[in-house]
Image (cartoon, rainbow over all chains, first blue to last red; front, top):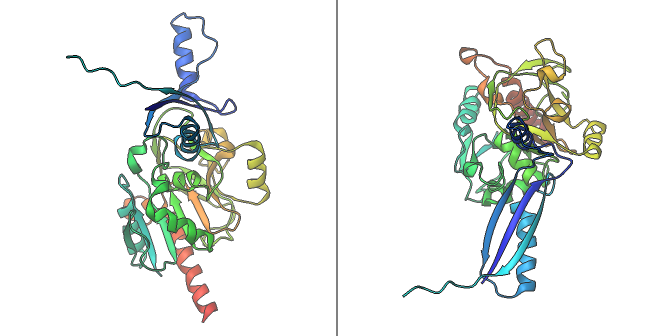
Length: 88
Length: 235
């Protein structure tokens, strides 16, 4: 089984008020913080074993639903997920 | 006039729209999002609320519902579509309107009366307003911060697609009158063809004096009058 780990973030050109609020908070706590951007993390397990096909599917769903290309960008990794052995 | 109001799981303003239209003498129908449109309509309304719990992004999941296929087709044929609040978010998500709606810049949910300046009065939605008129219509949202890139904004301005702008009580379109950080104080826009309007404020909540105002009524009555003119013209 293939598993995609997808990160969706606001484009750099889009102001991220949540990120700014957290950034200010971390600075006021005394941490040396340059910038914070907040995004979304999604884990998608695919019912597809072919890597090329899985890549196609992930890109399509990211474009169609999981991100809004007007304001967001996405990146992902794809890896084999091995079924854990059931302990006896 | 045949008016359909599409109800999604999580809609919560569809009955307000239904009530407002009945107050104004119309007999709208409430439609379910999973059903294809069973007949033809003169106006389709996408009401406010929190369709699908606003999961992922506001309006993102509703945009793929069965009824939305028909809304997109209907809009493409020149049919009038009005998206209010969550309905506006659906219209940007499905690409019928440009730009997107982000979290309010203040990070606060805004529920309050809001002044708007009417920028277009030649649309079927707005003929009964005066150019530049200052009206008061409530906003009720956490994600109404309209964004579009510089080229997109130039296009909106060049085509006069901005219909309503947030303003102060004395009619100034300024940061002081902007409840959510929207670029250029945009509260509502129309597509280039002029038949699809999206707006964050809720006109359906101000059609009766007894509940605080009537500044939303001209929007719905404008549509009814425009429809009557089109029927007379057609016959």
